[in-house]
Amino acid sequence: MYNSKESFGEMTNLDFCQDLKNYPFVETPEPMKGDVCPENDSYDNVSDNEKDSQLKEAVEKVNETGDMIHIIKQELKCQILYKRFQEGKNAVDTEVKPPIQYELRPEEETRILRRREQNRKAAQRCRLRKKNKMEELEDNQRYMLKEKENYERLISQLQKENNQLRLLVQNYSTYYPTLNWGENASYPCT
Image 1 (cartoon, rainbow, N blue to C red):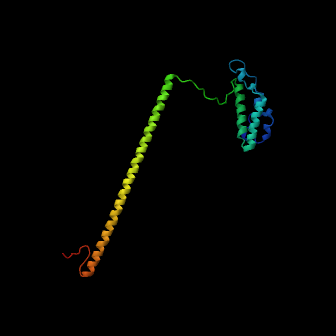
Image 2: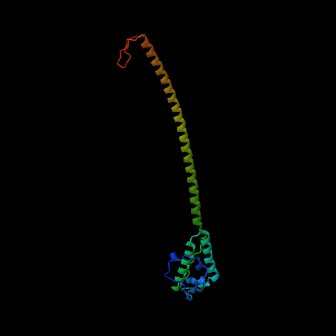
Image 3: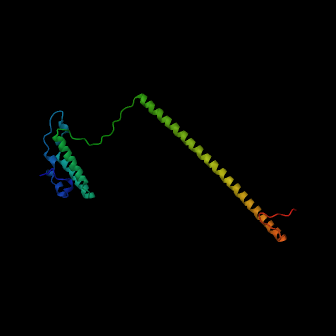
């Protein structure tokens, strides 16, 4: 029979999954009648076939993935249900229910429509600001490119002028070899 002190980590044999009688939920006590445990919510209303199919699904998942977590989860679920019914509580409903759609009041509808319109206008203003900023950046880029071209022309012109002046100095130095052409040199007056 099932040993409640047995830990989940020690259960490695998959054969225990084949015999459903090894699980504690099979021996659940009769549900309490009345307000505490209504008969339509009782765990006994879940058929043995459904319990067995849930367990078989877990075993199939273990066989597919090789991970025991699916069986452990199923056994934990069964133990939790067993304990809840021992305490006289209802089964926990784990089904995901779709959200309930309520009808909106007219003032809520107008508020939503007003917010949508505000968001639409704000998005339009944001797009316009972004467009203006991009145009400004493009204009700035064109201006900078023109400035760069102007400076490159100026640099080229100054380099030509510098080369011409060097040639002049070189020519004068050949005609006036005795003159000192350094930084502190005195130049002849012309």
